Image (tube, rainbow, N blue to C red; front, side, top):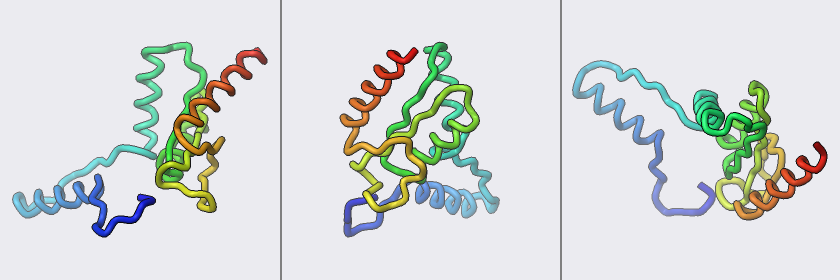
Length: 130
């Protein structure tokens, strides 16, 4: 997390560790865990499949995110293996800040509204060039 906070952040990883420890204590066995989420390709495959089931003519997906290590990395990886274009847009309103590694983002915007405006301009120019 980009902002400062006096207490540690407890997120999905913390929950998983607690669940594994509790399961081991109660059962004496290791809990088999499958972690999904960004940037696992399973998450991006699921999103792409759902999108194409509802909008089969989709040719481009825009991933707008604030975390190069998950949002952007996942979109870049999906773009390399997909039949449709995944365009990764990094925003400055969250985890990432200028000067940090941008994980090959296709574009960087100040915030989500600027990302939407960029997408609209890009789509308009791509449509004109067809």
